[in-house]
Length: 209
Image (cartoon, rainbow, N blue to C red; front, side, top):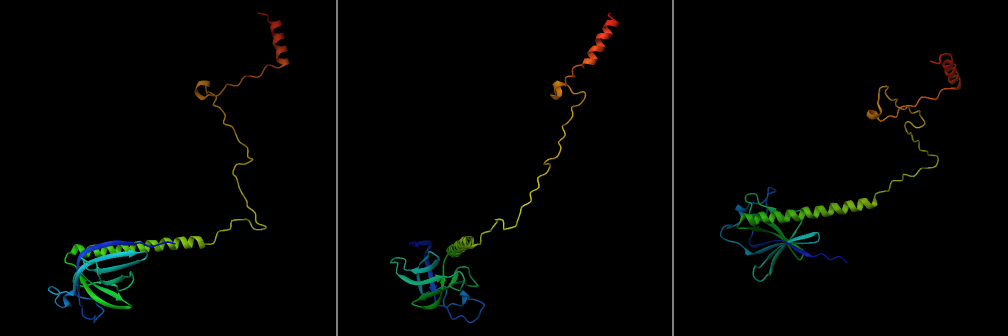
């Protein structure tokens, strides 16, 4: 049986939680509308982003004891994590507990912490999409119908091969080609016929000198 292990994607030692007013418009949240943003906060502690299999959660814990304050299950498609409109350091988290949920404000003092928080969530989303795409390819590859290339009854295959059975002409050697230059062996003249030999002998008798 395959077991999924927890993987810590990010740890931020200090983050802040705020009460936020109910959302009144679809335009989004603004941190400037939160009560006493600069001087008051509801809770302060550690933030951890943890993945397990195909799930990811944002855990707000006490920095010293590890006691859990709130959990935000992260959903790629949904409103579990929203950035505010007027700052890159503040977010709205949808926390859940025993089937109930609520929205809280969460922020960082350093912009680098907010940047790392965004990157951790984006990396998890990319990895999850890549795994789902690989699973889809594996399923579609196994279920795809196999092509039948066998011949059906009455079917034939015609194959045409060029220059089969045709006459082939040999290249003729040049008249002035030499043995050393072209590599052709000169043809030996045929022997004289019997009639030619008899004529030569008669000529020799008539003209001995």
